[in-house]
Length: 585
Ligand SMILES: C[S@@+](CC[C@H](N)C(=O)[O-])C[C@H]1O[C@@H](n2cnc3c(N)ncnc32)[C@H](O)[C@@H]1O
Picture (cartoon, helix red, strand yellow):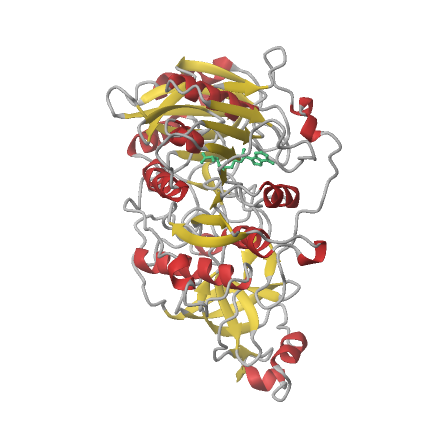
């Protein structure tokens, strides 16, 4: 095992030859034709730390739409549009609902960020609505106009969606985390599977008319555990609790003066007070409740950080749940992110927290910047260990406060088994594996004992050192982890490792940079296993790897052998995919 290169105990990003001469290139846009991608703001929900930026709208048959006119009467859409005898495309161009206009709509499907996709009758015009669910008929008001679609806010449900269930969590209707808790789980995964399929066809440009397509596109793997599956949650502190206007109008003021909880969907500065989250472990809920009970005590001297005035002390409470390797019981890391180092202020809250038996580590990340991230410039261990452990596919991993680790450990076992199946190892230990975007090295390390060697690339220095430590902890000595930015590779990239038999690539939401795609097309490894948390950018990259970039005279050299959607995050819009690409020779 080795980390390359190490300079005076620190690895410097710019000491890599392949990072020289970097020119910023625009990361590609998705096609905007038949199935168009529309930009959206990054989510500020604390539940999804890697939230990014794509939403997809689907082209599905038009539905009957009724619009309310300014005098309050309801007319059919056709009358208002007056575009009966134009072609579909002309109609789309000529029709645009007005801001404030009300529409009667039926939700047809869920888009990438869980927004309901609807179409205005006869026009094909796409309207997106947060928290509208497939089959639901509702009245929506146009709130935002984008280039080629509009957003509406749901005013009233006329008939509920087809698979309505009571949401077990009282916060589900408002919090940014679980958007689909009141959709039957089977319907949630059906919608995710359909979403992946449509993206692969429309963005990836693979034809579903091909009889082979159905064997390539595998049915989604559901998650057997639909609650308490998250091993990491980040709650934010704020000066004022947020409640949706509807509840405020109904007189539901929050009796608390400060807020500790999750962000209102789309807002970095509005925090919904949360005392319990059904996605995290019971032990983590004990800690949350304990902190909620004590931190507002006027005698404690604690104050929440205000993102506008940049005053106050407590920024975030991050809770990570791992497993004690000896006992198999949960062990917890509590991470207080603060704006300054004032240990004495944390004393009372730490004293209370350590009484919870599962707590194995309490750390303090001090982040003095005005930004709202949870990674501190300095980290102090206030109690117990500085890391917690977790077991994945028989290996032990040490997790520090800021390292990436798959957030659903249970389903990560399933995911990694699927990756291993795709690797189709010969069994003679001869393969060379390149693990791109390797995080703490988990994928490569779970394969390492059965291959010749693993090379992992990762941009976060702490994740690289965790990967090295994890290799050592598990007695693995054929894995090399290299720190570097895969968006900034140059012609030298590839000189530091032998030609791999298998490339595993697991980028975060923006997908792979075009430079990396070009590199992979030149490298021509036998297999690429593309693991993705964003089916839109994944479909785009599959298109490039299989069909090439004709405008740049680059030929695609892979054939798509399988796409396996996996539900890692029930009740959220997220869907993971494991795709196998084989060299097409
Ligand atoms: C989805 S995670 C996958 C981690 C790992 N494969 C796993 O399963 O635990 C993506 C990883 O890519 C890293 N990353 C993001 N952008 C990167 C870049 N430009 N170059 C290298 N690594 C990057 C992130 O820090 C993160 O660890």
